[in-house]
Amino acid sequence: MKSKNGIKEKFQQLFGIDLRSLALFRMCIALVIIIDVVQRFRDLEPFYSDSGIFTRILQMGNYNTNYISLNMISGSLYVQAFIFLMAIVFAFLLLIGLNTKLSTIVSWFLLLSVHVRNPILSNGGDELLRQMLFWSMFLPLGACYSVDSILNPSKEKLPSKMLSMATIAILAQIALMYLITIVFKHRTEEWTNGTAVYYALSHDHYITPFGRFIFSKPELMKVLTYGAYWFEFIGTVLLFSPIFTVFIRTLMILAFILFQIGMGSSMEIAFFPWVSSISMILFLPSQIWDSLILKINLFNKVSDSLNKFFFSSRNLIGKLVICKKIISVKQTLGLNLIVGFLFVYILAWNYWTLYPKYQIPNSLQWIGHTLRIDQKWAMYAPPTRTSFWFVFVGTLKDGTKIDVFRDGKPVKWKTPKYPTKTFKNRHWRAFLLNLGWFPNARANILPNLSWYLCRKWNENHSGDKKLSKLETYLIYKEQLPDYKVSGPHKYFIWEYYCN
Image (cartoon, rainbow, N blue to C red):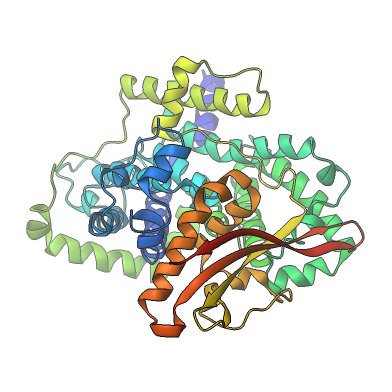
């Protein structure tokens, strides 16, 4: 009997999640959503409206029609702005834990909608954020440190930790991301011969000053290649260590966060390091909360102040609660069965990405596409060896040549010190990199892009300063072994007459 209880307790320790960890995870993931939506808002017209580059007709004609998106109901700029504002509102409700379950579901659906509306802006960070939010719908994110918990009509004390099929699924999802990547890396020559970091940091369109420093150290890059390879595998396994669980897991959480900070400091890879680090919060042992975090006076003071504020305002806030339910961490059998099926489904999907002959039946693929739990974790496996950027040469009516993408500055063909700085922001970088990687995307999108750039320029200029012609050039170089480089090469790809 003791042995069975011991196994049960150990299983709960390994696959259960502390409610306080869920609360902190909720707040962090909500902040990421808010920042993401605000950043996307800056490019609402070019990327999400029919008056921009990536129109709905272009989306429907070139991407999976099984995907569902609220953003596809209208191409109006105002409708898109309203949907984005909705996303910010519900993410804020998720942040404070008001109507948490509804806020999580709506935030997931609106995030999914934005990703479907313009898929070429997404990267690994967006993919991971979407998966984390999906599994969060089945978890009681508002059970602790939330408005919902303050308004909870039940006086029954909740357990500090919960175990369900959903906690298993979300922790396994994080582990899958690293383990599947390792299998892809194991098949890649650059990871087995120690050159992967060398080629990854050769990407001028991603590299930062810190990354440039590491790129100058060949021996260090070789150590980092093998170190990253083995750390992702061993570190993931140790997160579920059955012995010295608290100590080893805490050490691995810190190691993974430092690992992601290192990657984010050396390359411009958007939200991926942040979402990966936030995901590690779910592994925080209860003992860390009990023995360390709650002893920090500042944390206690902030928590107590917020509790007092919301408790004193409970009558007013209570009116905002759509459905004031008793908070429970117990999961019904039906819900566990649904989550269990979805968990097995993503295991099968990931296995399919590794071994294409074991394809999920066509009749079941719609589940992955509709819920956007279709995923492939092959980051930098293999790392591409090509760097590129674009130069948009505009010819004014008076014959002057300008760089349209750099606000009309003189055209420069010389390689910029940091080409990543030539992109307006991370979404323009993702957009243009996809044009560089995929010739079919260039053929489909360049006409709209050229038309849009001409229109925006001519709306703000008159007479001889208007654009008459726009030429698009792709500048690329290939990294060779031993710091040798082929290029840069100038490749003319498109000409557009603005009239």
